[in-house]
Amino acid sequence: MTKPTILIIAGGKNSRFFPLNTYTHKGFIELLGKPLIVRALEDLEQHGFTQIILVVSQKDNRPKKIRQWQEQYDLTLDIRLVLQPEAHGQGNAILHGAECIDGDFILASPYYTNMGELAAKLWQKKQESGADCVLLSSPSKNPALEGILSIEGDRVTGVIEKPAPGAEPSKIKVRSVYLFDQSFLKVLKETNQEEYSLEAAYDTHCKTAFYTHVETTASLPSLKYSWHLFDMFQALMKAETTHISEHAQIAESAEIDDSNGPVIVADGARVLSFAKLVGPCYIGKNTLVGDYTLVREGSLEEGAVAGSNTEVARSILLSGATIHYGYLADSIVGQNSKVGAGLITANKRLDRAVIKTKLKGTMIEMGTNRAGVITGEDSALGIRVSTMPGVLIGAHAQVLPGTTVEKNIEHA
Image 1 (cartoon, rainbow, N blue to C red):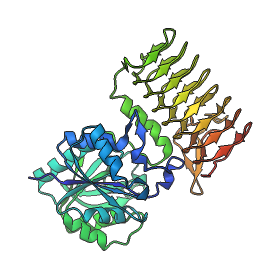
Image 2 (tube, rainbow, N blue to C red):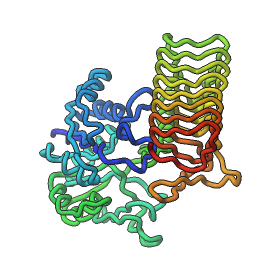
Image 3 (spheres, one colour):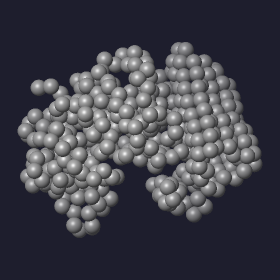
Image 4 (cartoon, rainbow, N blue to C red):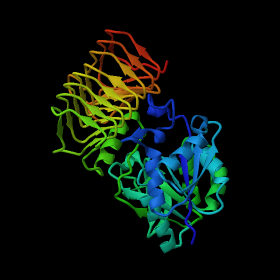
């Protein structure tokens, strides 16, 4: 029996991922030297899924780039790009992609790096149960904040979004990987296209079609907000072991400590005198760790620079980002961003309360009491800049020397 097509949705504006959402979809971000979507495609190939439909927005509609990835990572998948011209929601993106699909399909996001494993679970469940559609599920700790399944035996009879406390039909939540048949698309087309059109459509469809579910305890990292990139880094590093490339330059006085997690140093990296790397830590291709610099529990992506006398703690420098002589904690510096000497990031409130930041006019809890700064692509921070906890600085923004940044700065 032919395995279903994989429909990957990588369109939309990703506005909640501010400030890391301008050059490309969040699923195309490189972490540990490889785009997240490539990790997902590799896992799909390992589990025997070969037909891929990738729905993208105009900024990612680059067939040449996909071909380059296929050659670079030896992918033999049949990948077809479909353009979603306008960001009209997930339901609209599905309908664009589904025009290229004849049979069953599995819907997922591009940053699920274990996508092949999850797709295999759904496909096996369909074959065993004879169901029309299969939902991925797991136990819920916060039913009031999630989509909760109504279940009769092995059959899903409905999905209730964010039920009132005490009104939950079960303690099982739906996860965002799904196996649908063609009849689902007819219901989706007839559903009003808005933010939750997908959920509304499968809640309606399961009243007439045979839906079942398969539980998983596998990690399914979210990238709803930009700071979720830290969780993704930790998840990826758990699968790694220490590796120091023979093509890297490590000073004799440099120290590598992998007692609490692996340390990876890639080809062309330079780690200078009296620098220290503490795992889990990734030092990417052609990066520089300067004299007397400490990098602990963080990542320098390809071409990034942490110059002399700098502490990079639990932070990520995306490709081409640079900093020197400063303190960067619990922060993300966007692609090709430049940080002048003397940066100090405040990463905790004085009262140690959970940190909030403002997105789309609403204050959002970041889920931690430890958060520094996140900058968008090509931003520039002058010398002696200080940032308050949870500050977001947009792409191409410029911060003048000596400034204390207390509020978010939009894209320039």
